Length: 120
Image (cartoon, rainbow, N blue to C red):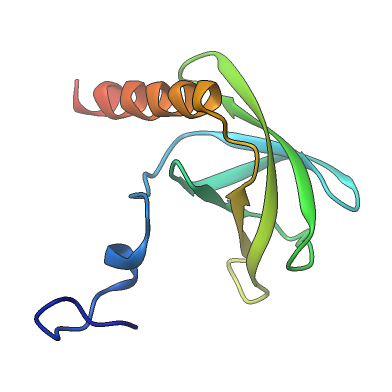
């Protein structure tokens, strides 16, 4: 953990480049196998945490389709596995690799729409 300007330790959330949001969404992804319908624990503009018992190795590139049932839409992206948790609940962190401005705008719109629906 690193320190802020006043020498105070920063939390992992403060160190992240993008805030994470809990979403009602799932992902289909292809790494070493094709895996369908895995729960997304949280999502940001930088990546996501996927709950799955079929963990990929760190460094694996995965092709993903994020499905937002609340919005009746999906988004295709590529990512890299950056961490895995082999203990329960098994999950892994994926960093987005090909998030161009168009996809970033779409993802931002999805996150905002989900936040609005939850606060309505």
